[in-house]
Image (cartoon, rainbow, N blue to C red):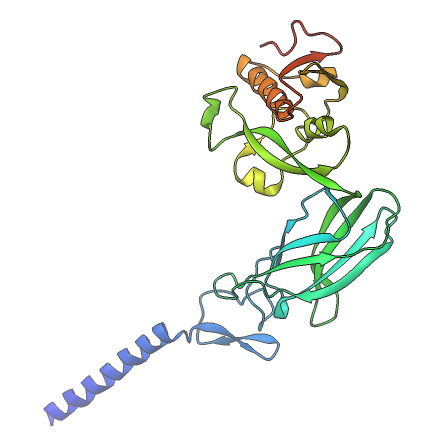
Length: 295
């Protein structure tokens, strides 16, 4: 009889251990999606997910990622919209407005340009968007999705635009924290492409780009500029292979140390020398070339 009792006890113990292991590997202590809500299954240690069930998991603000156009980038008609999404059923909507808020174009599409696999569930998109003639040169691009529950616009990204008739690509020269850590070589700069409005004054446009914050991709790759955003180009002339550029005093305000001044000079010089008509560069501030950008 004692042997039978021990055998029954052993069987029960094995069954209990099996049930515990099954719960551990079977994912029963979890939240599961039932209908339109999350339902407790077992005893999950984590709170219920904050995302709507039935949709790919996405962090707030990251359901849609736009890589083109970037902030304040000059755009032509049609506008090129590039990015990725993990919205509900990968449905993406857009709207283009001019400076008065008038809608120039709106529509939707399904992002189907890439894999839709865990853990990100992203799918890429690359759309060409035609828009009506804008009033003025500035506007916005809105990219969003409509909530499946009530139709409200969610996960919206608003991108400032600069409307132009034609664009071109120029190079600007920036520092880089990855390629030149701790600015070991003070005059070392690296080329980056920027899209600007096509104009006869293309050298001035290139210099102006040095004063803007880098794009998200550039900043992520370690690029940075030493030229202040409030500096003004007062005059630029190219004669006999020499580019003479005159800046306002803001170019050197607050700039200290020989390394930083060498860096700013290198940025300006290399950005201008990309043009075949420029062999040498003379920098001045309020007409003065002596004792400027000094440590």
